[in-house]
Length: 261
Ligand code: PEP
Image 1 (cartoon, rainbow, N blue to C red):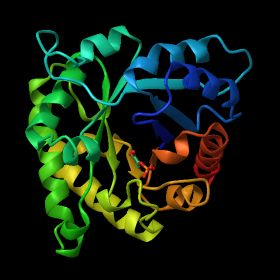
Image 2 (cartoon, rainbow, N blue to C red):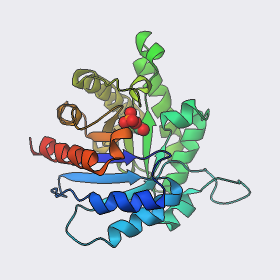
Image 3 (cartoon, rainbow, N blue to C red):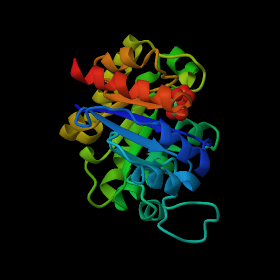
Image 4 (tube, helix red, strand yellow):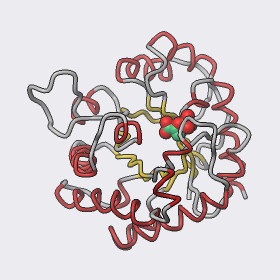
C-alpha cells in the first residue's frame, strides 16, 4: 500500500509561517510511493495551497485538509466550519476525532461519527483518529476502546451517501504518546494496528483491507523509519515534528524508503 505521511499543525503556523514553510519544504520523493497530507489551521489553508501552487520546481504533490469540522452543512453555528465550506476552500480531507478534540473539547464518539458522515457527504476523505488512554491500555482495554471508537464511525457511514470503506483513513494514536515524547515501539504499533484492522473488518467488512492505517504519537525523524517498517503501519500522522520543514521532509524520505522495502 502507498505510504501516507500526514502533518497535523494543530494551532501553529499562521498564513505567513505557512508560506515560509512551503518555501523550504521540497522533498524529492517518488510520488507513487508516498502520499503527503497537510492539516494546517483553517486560516492558513488558502495560504498553504497558494504557496504550493505558486512554487516552482518539482516537489512531491501534496493534499490538504482541515483539522475539524461541524456536521451541519451551514447554519447558526458561530465559530464553526462545515465540510462543505472546507471543500469550497480547497480541502480534500478532514481530520476527525483527534484525541485533543475528544479529550480537551469533550467530543463524543457519536459526534465523531456525525462528523465522519458530514465529511463523506461533502466529498472529503475523513482521517479518523482513534486511540486509548494509558489507564485503558494498562487495564487491558485496548481492543474494547478501538472497537467502540471505530464502531461509532461504521454506524455513521451508511447514513452518508456514497460512503465506502475505501474512502477513509484511520490514524491509530495512543493518547499517552501524543506530544509527550513517549512513542509506541514498532512492536506495540504492529500489535495495535493488527487490532485496528481486525476491528475494521468487523465494522466495515471486506473494504477494511484497503483502508490505510497510520500511526501517530511523537513520531520524528529518528523513529519514523522503524515505525513505518512495522507490519500493518501504512504511514504516520505527525504533530510537533511536522512544523519544521527539514524534519518533516526527513520523515517523508523515511516513508519513501520504507515503501521501497
Ligand atoms: C498529533 O497531533 O496527531 C500527534 C501525533 O502529535 P505529536 O506528533 O506531536 O505527538
